[in-house]
Each structure stands twice: as C-alpha cells, then as structure tokens.
Image 1 (cartoon, rainbow, N blue to C red):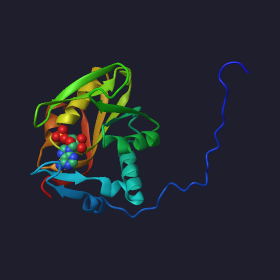
Image 2 (cartoon, helix red, strand yellow):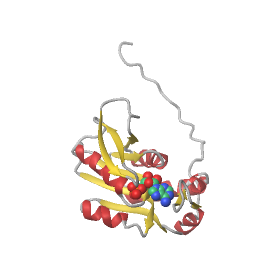
Image 3 (cartoon, rainbow, N blue to C red):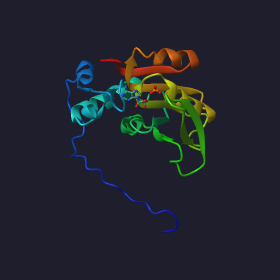
Length: 203
Ligand code: AMP
C-alpha cells in the first residue's frame, strides 16, 4: 500500500474508568491542604495534591468542569504551567477539544508569542506557540488558582494576540479576598470567569 498505513487500535472496553461518586464541593474544599508560610512567610499555600491524589475527587472535578463547559463549542483548552496542566487535558478530551500549553519563559521549542505580568519581585514571562490557536477557535483557559488575576490576565493577552474572539476562563479555586475575579471583569468584561470553589485566602 502506498502512503499512510492504517492502524486499528482496539480499546479495552472493560476498563471501568467512570467512578460513581457522592462527592460534594464542600468536601473538596475541606480536602485542599493549606500550607502556611510556603513558599515564603505570610503565604497560605493552597495545595491541591491532596485532592488530585484521590480518584473520586479527581473524577468529580473533571466531571464538574466538563458539565460547566459542555455545549459551548470549545475547540481548545489552554492550560497554564504547571498546575493548569493537571486537569486541562482531561477536560479537553471530554469536550472533544485540543490541549494547548502556556509555559514559562524559554520552555517551548518552536516560535512563540509572549506576555509578561507583575509578580511581587519583577516581571514574569509566559509563552505560547505562535501557531497554537486560530481566530475561529473557542477557547477555555484553565489554571488551578485565581489569586490576584495577574497571570490569568497575561494568559488572556496571549490568546487574544492570536485573534481568538470567544474565550472562557476557569480556575479550580478562587482565593476570596484578593478580588482577582473583579480585577479580570474590569480588564476583560466580555470574558466569563468561573471557579469550582471559593476559599478564603487566609483560611
Ligand atoms: P495570580 O496571578 O496572583 O492570580 O496567581 C495565580 C497563580 O499563582 C496560579 O498559577 C497559582 O498556582 C499561584 N498561586 C497564587 N497564590 C497561591 C496560593 N495561595 N496557593 C497556591 N498557589 C498560588
């Protein structure tokens, strides 16, 4: 046969990957671990490793996020390095969309576009491949935590640079008391921002 050869992959239909669950958002919130003074004094670090290591909670989060975005015509889910990479591909697969990474400076191999945002000390740069999105894509940007909104604002800037008109923003956790959502609303009034749960920043 000339040209491409066809391969047939038999999926193992016996794998039971859907887990029945009575999980609730309240339970999930309780199970996020708060680590005081990490990575430095005064920061209450919200550690999601204690919810992603639980099969029931992991599937619950995926399913809840998929429910929120099904039917919106999403073609690409953009994940922000690094904790945005955990659920974004799973959501993308369920929505029948592709996954696109936004990475830290100098990590992507091909031609990139970039945006910078203010961190406590100096500027941080994030990048995305120049050919990762096209103007007719409908995009969902996902990260683990919405704090001040600075890094999400830079991610939106990257997606917009590639001409995308319709986009949604999602984080697992909104840190209440930092007004990240209000900040984004002011900067990007047309972008719908939704989070799975809200946790007090000092909780
Ligand atoms: P921001 O740009 O201020 O909205 O910060 C959001 C980014 O910083 C996300 O990628 C989070 O992973 C991380 N982040 C900010 N604050 C916290 C926190 N208290 N605990 C864990 N991660 C955080």
